[in-house]
Image (spheres, rainbow, N blue to C red):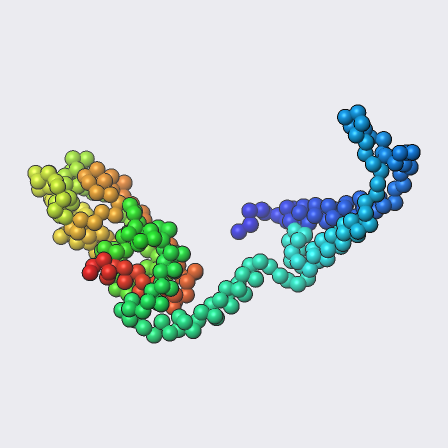
Length: 302
């Protein structure tokens, strides 16, 4: 959407550009027709530093012709290509149009390669070094900014090598995540849990689920209040991939470990979003990329 609500700025740029070119042409014409009577010593009369005088020599002809050619070129270019405001030029060229043509040419060029990979499943692609090399490049371009070049993620960004899948670790689930993205939402749950003391007790119970160090007495009290969390995480705390609810028993803490981190999560909730890549990658590329991601998890599991 344009930042402007009228054509003023487009018209302003067009007029300013055209006036600048015409001003150069007028300056050339005036300078070429104006006659200056030189002094006896062929100077303009300007003197600097007592003895530095400006000579009254005209520009070389080739230099004048070069200026004229520049003015003509600017006018012709402005007629053929977008230069004067919103005028698109007689050739109809645009940078976005050229980009689309170049992208299409590249897609046509690599289509046979991906067509061959589209026939193979994830396991077969994982055993193909060339396919994995392509998958790695795709990962570096589109995924590593969040998940890291080694795919081990960071706080708030899932580790893709630990075989802990919030939304499922099947090829179809991974391709779905890459294609359309994911949006994991945990609402603030403090009101549902109870008092601040109840929240602290639930945090200790959550720590106990993964065998982490915890206060056993508070964990016992927190178990009674965990029912508010069980709707998403399950009564056993093992999560729900249909909702992207994390498994609380595996010792993997996406948003930080410890009672303070869990209390903060219960009080404030969390909204994590992964953007979909369908606008940037085609189906065959996503298939190769998903196979690469799954191969990273399989290697870690071995």
